[in-house]
Length: 228
Image (cartoon, rainbow, N blue to C red; front, side, top):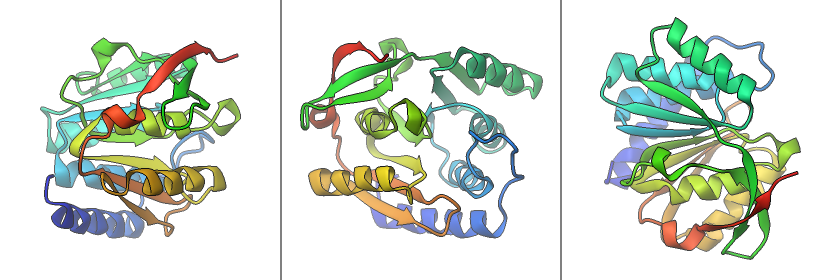
């Protein structure tokens, strides 16, 4: 995954295939759209990322686990969710489908963290260090927390900080104003470290952030206090 031009070609092919053959739609209003789910399935099948980190659990978690089981069974998925009900439901769905060995969902309360970039307080997940692989994720998927609970800016920064060089962060809802402004800021601040591609053909827009060089030291979030 270190050759960025080759990776972008693979991503483009994955996007084309996902848009031509989207996954089955879910009636869950919180779920990723069918075309975004299909894209993640294509990415896992084509790139076989060993370590996958997901912010927000549900339909996408099961889809990722199915892809891992089929194409790269040595890979593992760690999914984070702030809602205990979603944690329990998704873990139960994984076990029922025989996918529990490939993915696990963990409760991660929402907290406020102060960004070292501009000192603002951002909502994100409180993640135990033990859940974050010391070598970093190869693929991170950001689909939480919901906008009404603080939005995803903090999660995008946490995902970037948790992704190794050569890895990728995928962000849903890239066509929405709030997410678009986050992507704009990342391009401005980390243009030498992160390549950004937006594909607005997807139902809610999709952005892929390729980490060419680690940005962990630049985007670290400092503890503040629990979100209320």
